[in-house]
Image (cartoon, rainbow over all chains, first blue to last red):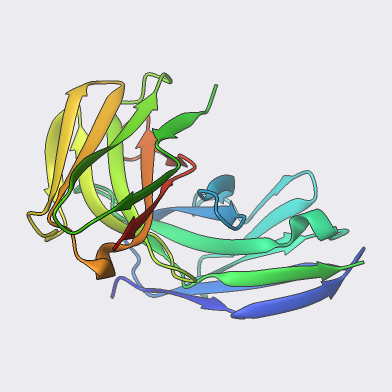
Length: 113
Length: 112
């Protein structure tokens, strides 16, 4: 099944806190898992991505944790800032064919000062 | 430079108009894409071009017509659109089909 389930739908975090967004999938043919950040009226920006042979990837305050056996991956935003307030989409790319990118439904993050 | 540019930023058109959206990238990417995004929803794939050839048309109505004049440019020609076609139209590119996709800022289209 080519679906990616993302939760929560919305998230409120205090400044300095940790934001955690989770995604789960069923299709084992996915071979690349990017996260996109989108501000209102803007296009999605590639934030960080991971391949299934790696369990964790960190870039600055952003970390992806990947659990291949559970078919789950998550985004952690450490020391969350008001400027991080945006919609976050997880995605999974199908291996082969035209490498279709399947998006999660999105999480609207609000970081309060 | 990881920039994909799109023009215009905003477009209002009537249902009988013909207009075009333009997308440009200078990253040497060989795959380019058109997506449509409705409010509070993820992007939906419309078309995929690989090496300037149309690879995928995701059952998009014929009132949307893509064109790839060269490896850096992608156009989307619009004709006889419906109000429900109002959305943010996003262009994206990637080094090749298996690589990560970079999105442009989008064109906000309103059909009246």
